[in-house]
Length: 62
Image 1: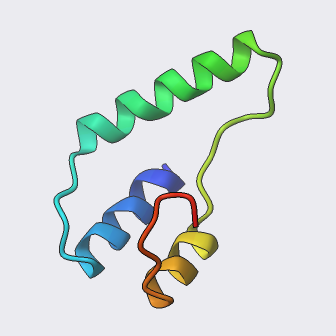
Image 2: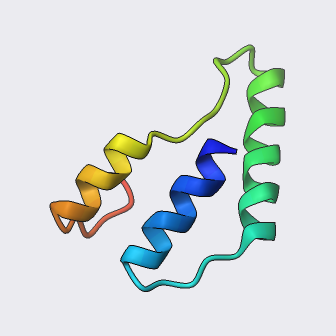
């Protein structure tokens, strides 16, 4: 739920399109893939996303 709310807030602030279904699907795929790879749980970081938004980061990797 945290990733959904933070991505919605970021989309509103950056005036970009936000698709809830795409967000659910991408989170599910990432969590399933992490389970098969014995990885840590997948989640986003709201503080990092907010920092990138305020710093006007242009790439997805920043």
